[in-house]
Image: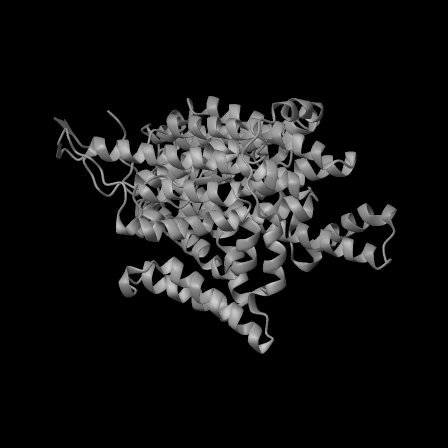
Length: 552
């Protein structure tokens, strides 16, 4: 006879249920989330990197499907073991899939520059494989130090920086897409909102996510009758999509992995900091699951991500696997064990049979966007709901680097688009591009846009949010020694460019952003001095915020 974490006796022969009615809700919700990411990823490969369909549908997507299937099955297994150990029937599997931020990073920072430089998409693919190769080992090694970091970092800091990701990079784009096509987006959002937040049950228990997608399709296709074209769907698009139908299984790509080592110098500059990003993000998501009642072993989670990413890489997939943000959301809508494994089966069917493009032609993306917004809302709320009320200011502090990073991305994208447009109409010579961009950025402060501030504060936002959040929590708790330690860690991370910097290194020898690193060091020294004073007889506290009595 064993006992659960709550002290309740657990029968030795307890067998968790593999599928519950709530798994349908979670499956359609999470499955459509995965589907959106796969559709975006396929678009990046075909239209940005200009990779041939034979490579995209014949090599990359089958390898991606294998990796994600292994991942979702493993996390379903971990959930089964946890349910068996605790005797609980409400255990929810961790969601996982392709890391969305890395999907764009490896495309635009690694594969695209190499493809442009060499004129060969296969070279770009090889460089992406090497990037994932190194990321995988960083995750596997980092899995053994992650539990220590979780123990010493306040929950408000871990969940606060995660909330920053959810508010900016998860919630904003779906919200904007909804309002660009409100006839579909807002209607589908209302269908989801009243069910997943309001508790409304639809006839025959049909999942809200499925109803939202069906209604979105009806509106989109029905609008074509009146020539409105909402959602951008057409019969011609469906016909063209069927050309990609076929059956392909993963084929080892070890030779392509090692041929990409010629680009190692460019790859390591981003592989190391983003490996650390993955490490922290995975810790945050495990912490988020624990806050929702499901305690998973951090080391196993991180090493599993590394191993399945490595397998995918060796089979030809240039995208890394990650535990997803959103566990509390899928659990809240009834997801348990089966939804994770079912998603793995779905991904294999989609990727091995080449039907991603068909789905893209049938379902308007704007009908799926509300599901992503729902997840972002839930994760943002969790940071405040599962931490002490007095830590709320620290959570807001942890949000700020992500707001800066998101705003900078919007400005950079706009500048790039404007310059490209100017060149296309013959209004900007190629040798003037850099000068025009520099002049535009220099003029932004006069318009009230502090671009340099966004650039510095938003660099390494997930680490910056964690450090700032931790400092905030410990200052609120008046544990100035621990606040000093995190400020000192912030100084070290900033010195080497992991925070508040655009590149890893030591700059000119004084650090990537020496002024910020020095400021963190000064803060650390001040907080440490305050911690010494706080335990002495001569410390005088602010009358409105008395300190605890000095230790005897």
